[in-house]
Image 1 (cartoon, chains in turn orange, brown):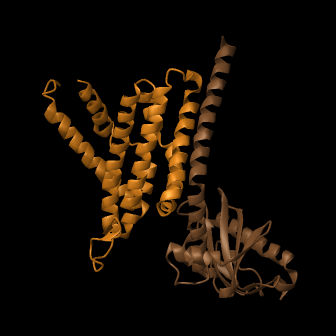
Image 2 (cartoon, rainbow over the protein chains, first blue to last red; image 1 turned 90 degrees about the vertical axis):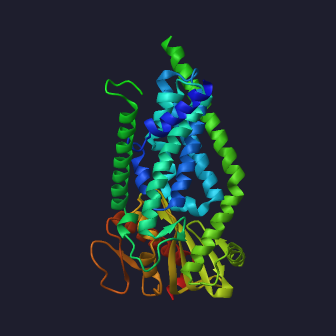
Image 3 (cartoon, each protein chain N blue to C red; image 1 turned 90 degrees about the horizontal axis):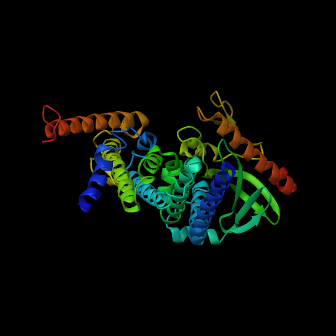
Length: 211
Length: 206
């Protein structure tokens, strides 16, 4: 039963409350960092780390946080973990840190993390909050990686820097620019929502009962 | 009741911020040496690009090259003199639109026995900037920085032009949509050259 609860929380964040195709959150970074898979992977790991750790800490101290200043506390905690990630990236992966530029710092303003802190971590236990945070962040990451694979492949002809499409094949330069990101994101959201609608409609009968 | 609630909130905030500061200080101190080393490699790489030294690519080579430089710190700039290669690198910073822009220029022949000679500007590279991505952030792009190569500072400072194409050889094409960043870069470059002239009048006047 307990295992089910954890899995359900994880699945809920991953699919039912997916920040990209369900809630349309975190779009700024989704558009900015998806021109290469390696940048997207790093961004995804950073968001997973920040969402899980900030959710864990907020959940741990939720009973002591004064209601009036809860938003300030959430932002301070989130900003701290983002800056930790930024410092670690600068020390361990300086090239990726440079390529991501200001977008690592902008994780602070990512609505996904603040949303999970307010909606879930402030009302639930630590383990569940970590699972919820990780689920939502992984859901965000999977979509981002999917977009980045399409963009890098069509824009540069490479995957993780390795040449996949022969040099002779013309590249779609639009895919590495902002409009390419918008088109790809729109198509991915369309497909994901169609799949979700189809998934819901086959699992629910005519009077709305789950099959 | 209200007063005690306010004090409790304030106390809690102080507690959270103390925890935050301690954690950040701990991580920053732990990674300080590694980050400094990366900064050194990055600066050496930028100097090599600026001075068109193509044979150095590995981190070991870059660190070895950097260690040969003689560093002279000043209030407005830092000179790293590479006598073996007959040039000096000048590192300086100036305000940008959002944050400081750190720049390096390489000058030949550079600092010779306390005289700074600027016969030729070998190149300019941006070490660090936090300008708007896609607009001011483009000051790092090769087409823009390449325009600074080969200038003779004897004739005057290079001028970045905004809103039109360059007309004379002393002008440099600015970046569309980044007029403020170009203006700030121009200012910091001019200030650096003015400071160099002030500190080494005999050499810069030649």
